[in-house]
Image (cartoon, rainbow, N blue to C red):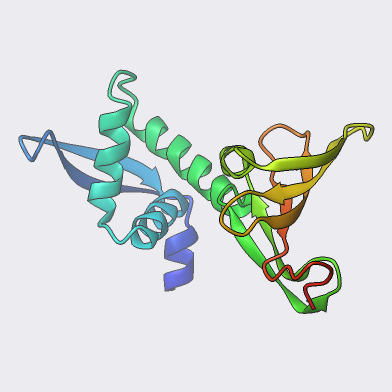
Length: 171
């Protein structure tokens, strides 16, 4: 069996794990795909798979189903990474007259924080699945913004901020 087949195998594999600060040893049996995902998620966080798994198990110790807790955490973290629940900046391939060089893909908490103290010039809630918000982000030098607020729960919003506002154009 080559390395790819080992990593994507559905065959159960057993690994040992120390719990409770090393005072308790247990074994976990998961399929190869789940172990590969755990290895990947731990590596992305710069930690050993044992530390990642222990953190998940400790946070959910009341269920008693360690394998189920790990599988659920794998799915949640991979979905977060896939769907993009982290805020990000999207850089455009060339400068755009309205958006400039980029826009921000943000989630509820980031948007709520950005809009605290913002001057909202106009809000249009007439669309079915989104709202349009136009205004200025307050600060030492207010920056005009355009926000497309997504009404689909848990999905990202678009926030475009004109960084170099000179009274008319950011070009």
